[in-house]
Image (cartoon, rainbow, N blue to C red; front, side):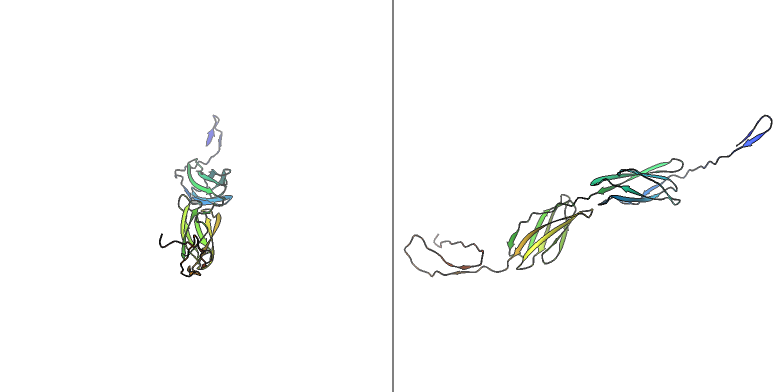
Length: 231
C-alpha cells in the first residue's frame, strides 16, 4: 500500500493476505470403545495447522495439527461414565468442523453369580448358569477342561461343563467385561460314578408282629425306602 501526499511525498507498507478456499476436513481415527483407564489418546487428521480442541472429558484438551494435518491429544476421562468426546477443528480462516466419538470408561469389576447349586451328580456333564455384566466373556475352569461363552445383553449365561469323573470339581466362573475388569464365583460339583448296591441281612420269614426291623448294607449316603409288595 503506497500513500502520496499533495507535495508528492510517498510512503508505503505491506500486508500479506492469504486466500484459502480449501475446505476443512476432520477424521477421528480413534474408534469408539470401552476401557479401564484414566485417559485416552485421540488421534486423527484434519487440515494442516488447524487448531484442535476436544471436549467431553474431564477438561477440554487443545492442540494444533502438524503440517501434514495429523493431531494427537491426550484426554482425561470421567471415571465409570460415558465420555462423549467432541473434536473441533478450526483452520486459519476460521472454517470449523466437529466430530465425536464415544469412549466408555469402566473400572468396576463385574459381579458374577453362579445360579447352579452345589450338588452330587452321576452325569459327566453339568450345565452351569448364572448372571454377570452384559456381554462379558465367561470362562469356567475346574472341570476336565476349560470352557467359555459370552453373556447376553441382559448378562445371563449358560455353559455345559465336562466334569472330572469320580471327583470333587470346584468350578470357577470368571467373567471379564469389555474394559478388561474381571470378577469370579465358584461352586462345588461332585461327580459320583459308583453304582448303588443293596444287600439285605434279613431272610424271608413268617412272623406274628406289628413291626419288623430290616437290616442290610448299601452305598454310603443312599436313601433306603421300604415298600410292601402287597401294598
